[in-house]
Structure formats: C-alpha cells, structure tokens
Image (cartoon, rainbow, N blue to C red; front, side, top):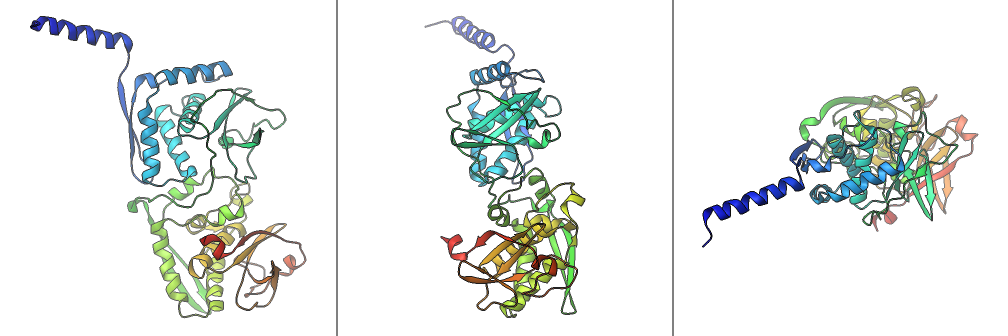
Length: 404
C-alpha cells in the first residue's frame, strides 16, 4: 500500500502542473441586468485578451487564435440557452451580446477590444459576422437578407453584410473607399441575422410607469392610463430603417398591451366598424403631439408602435405604424400603406369603400389619415396637398396571408 506521503507528493505535483499550465488563471463572475431576467456567467481570466486600442488585421487574427486557445464554451452555451428560454429575436439577442461584451471589456476603455468580443460572441453563436478595418476604425458587419435603407453594407459573393456599429462612426465613416475585410474562418459563423422583431422582452413589471393620455371623440373626452417602459426606447436606439412590413409588425410589450388594447376593444365593441376605425384614427391623430423627426432627432427615425405611446411627440411614420397595429389587433382588416414624397398614411379595406379610395390589386381601400393635417379629415378624405402628389404602395397587409 502506498504511503500517505506518496499520495501527498502526487497531489502536490498535480497542483504544480495546473499552476504551470495556467499560472495567472482565475474565474470571475459577471452579471448582466437584462430586460427579461439577469444573465450571469463566469469566465476564466485567460479569456481576457490584451490588445491595442488601434488594431490591424494581424492583431485581429492573433486575438482570435488566442481566445480560441482558451475558448470557454460555457459562455456561448449560456448565451444560447438564455436566447432559447426567453425566445429572443436576433435584434434583442444582439442587445444581450452588446451588454455581455460591455461587462467583459467596457466600450469606453478599449473600443476595439469591446468590438472584437462582440464579433467573437456573435460568430460563436452561429452568425456570419465580419470585421472591416481602415483609418483606425473597426467596422462590425453582419450577414443579413433584410431590406435596410440607412446603413452601409458590402457584398460578398451573393450575400449582403450590413454595418452593426455605424452609429459609432457615422460622422467619420468612409464611403469613398472600401474597408479591409479581415479574413478569419470561423466554422460556426454561417447564419444570417434578421432585424425582424416579432416579440418584445417580458420586462419586469416594476420598470413600467404610468402615463396619462387622452383625446376627444365626438365631443366626449376619453382618458387612458398607460403602462409604459422607456427601456423600449433603449432597445430601438440604434435600430435601422427597415422595410414597412417589418416596421409595422413590431408588437407591443405585454404590460403596455394590457393597459390599452382591452380598453380600446371595449370602447369600439358596440360601434359599427366604420365608426370604430374612425375612433382609432382620431385617437392616433390627437392623443399625441406632432413633431417631425428631423426636428426631434435631426434625422429620419421611425418609432415602433410602443415608442409612439411612450414618447410625447411623433410624426406620420410613427402614427401610421401605431394605427396599423391597432386596426390589425382590433379588426384585422386588409390595409395598404401609402408613401408620398414627404408623408406616409394608410388605407383600409371595408366591405364597401367610403369617400376617396385607392384601387389596389382589384380591391378598394379607403383612405384613413392618422396624422393631424391643416384641416380635420374624416374617413375617406385626403388633404389637398397629397391629392396632387404621386404615391407608392409600400406595404400590403392581407390577414389570410399573415395567418398562414
């Protein structure tokens, strides 16, 4: 039988071996206070890679090989498990990746390293992400099939790669010359990224606040106490201009939904459909102040329907999206969105057209203006200015097509 000292010596040699292999290794716990629920993870210190604040292709490749050599699969498994559990759309998942990278390597300390961690975590999560370098800038691209109109992109083979961190570089982004795309082969990085948001997080109820809104309809005042959460604004802070189908179909969060939709359904339940649609049109038109995006934000910016409820001021795109959501949720009628040179509005298909209507694909759609105009417009009326302008149908909603 081996002596106690023999076992003790063997144990000491094993500990010495581990110490030699990872002389400075230690685990650190991290906590991300994400919208649905806290995301916690633990990382070995070897996962923390030192790198210059200004990187070239060689340094990026070295970063990748270093982090691969100490790759901690647990963090990727934890991220993907969280994504699956809370049914996160790609855009919401990317917000989790951003906050996770911020915990590992704060953006303000080393922007390049922060971006490299985002890139690595997205790639290892299965997304085809690429990095572009030029003039000490590190540009983060993602493969996507979505129609995005306000972000830089590049083509590779038959794929589009859209810039995810343009908001950090928009004043100095170089449109005249191409960025050098770093050539790193990552087997897991295959999937396209979608900007479609079909579900908002289940926010903590304590993070909602009450907001009073009201309007008059046929001389009677209606008042609502909304539950709103400004975290929705955070989620969409850097959200791009997507196509109208994607934009119009962003849902409300559950708490906000329950604070407004049942009441609107109750008020319109006893009304004829035409009057109910008119009620919702007047609500969308007059329950919020109007202001053009360029005056508020200095650029074109579209609000998701919930953002129009949250914010005090909004423009025609925002109201069209909210009005669309309300009609779809309460009546589920066919609709078309019309874009004029400087305006967006909706037309709704009734059993019989009312007033001014648009013939589209063999059916008549009645104009319903959800944005205040110089004169008060009823259903089937369009302002004189827009009557003289050409329009484009930018989205056609047909309930049977959506339900398939």
